[in-house]
Image 1 (cartoon, one colour):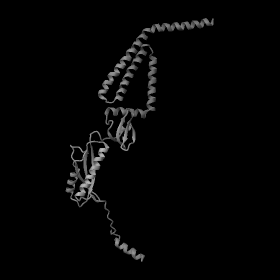
Image 2 (cartoon, rainbow, N blue to C red):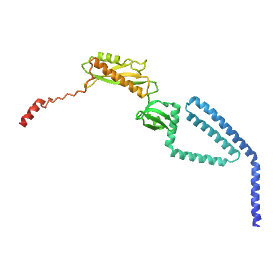
Image 3 (cartoon, rainbow, N blue to C red):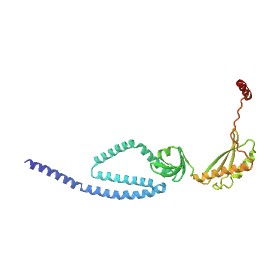
Image 4 (cartoon, one colour):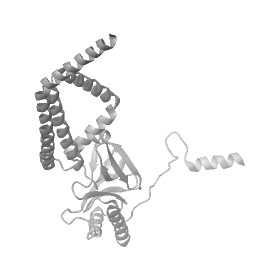
Length: 299
């Protein structure tokens, strides 16, 4: 008797499910059609989005990221529409609520990673630096080797690889020496107070003419700037046609050697630092008297 009752209950339940299945067959067919169409539409929109993003953003990684986001968004909308067709509105609401809570938790847990990631996106769009540029970021100067979505890799002139989070790159000043395609060099030199300043200027400018590596369109400029402790100091400004460090240092070395040689040939003095000691100040004794008094005391 109990077995028959249990069998009847199971049979009624299966019959009810079968009736519900038959009733939902049109919805299931429509939902399946929506999923298939949505899948193909998402792939098509991904290709279109990739072409559009390529026109404005010259970064393959970023283009793939945005295109994938479009694909995921369209596919997500398709799934929610299919669930709604199947009258699973409560399931849709639960999924959205769960996704919101999960997203909020992940945002707090990975806020530094998210910050670097968003900074990488802004750097890829604004493009203040490119791979191969000579830059200085914070206290690091060198050549950019990689620009990722999370960090920027810089190789210093001493050979160290420095990985800088994109948040630090975006929030700090960037000195880009490669942006103009040339780099200015400032040489500070001092000459004796006894030298003819006009002659010093003429000799210096003539000595620097024709150095290999200087730009042809920018003239060499010369400015006296101060009366130093033992010399009159001036700045010479030259423009090097490249920002690369070896060529830059080679031009500087050649300029220093030419200036020294020209000054030797024209009897122009680059003075040593001079210090004068005066023991005859008011209220004290001259050095001569101090020496005599000391000798007398010892005798």
